[in-house]
Image (tube, rainbow, N blue to C red; front, top):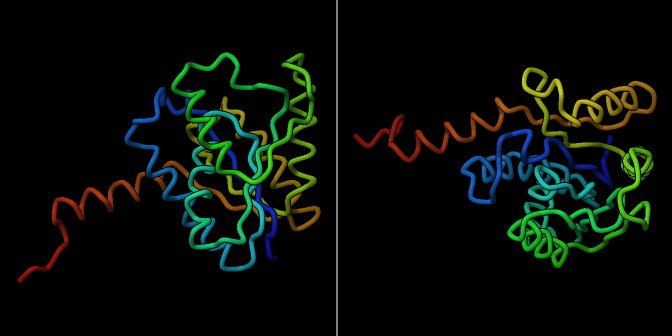
Length: 194
């Protein structure tokens, strides 16, 4: 099944114990997402759609923005649950969010008011699933029991069974293997220079 509009989401930064943009794991998360996006872009992907929360959502948007040079037809959207989700973020996160917003093609909020209840997240998620035909989910069963990403996995798998919704998963193991590859190529392990 071809995916024209993909939802990309996963862990929030704090769920991965990431508290700043300089964390060494972020580039590997982005590298894993980029690989999936390239695969989909080669098959006709048009839109990358994100809930825009701080963590995998925004790192995926940044990765997609970088791909626009190679795939100029690719468009990126952030659809948030409520107005001004970044309001209580630290300054560096707000600046990062502002840079991401400058690089995307579409921004909308499901509820035009500030946070007022969990119904806003439900309404956003209903819209995100309705507007997409597949998901790239950064999630791991072992580490994600209490994660908000677990809900996305359950819903996506249910939709996959009922309507052929596309499901692409990126585990922490996938990300770790990218980091390990980089480490071994930097140290020269496995290189035959004889």
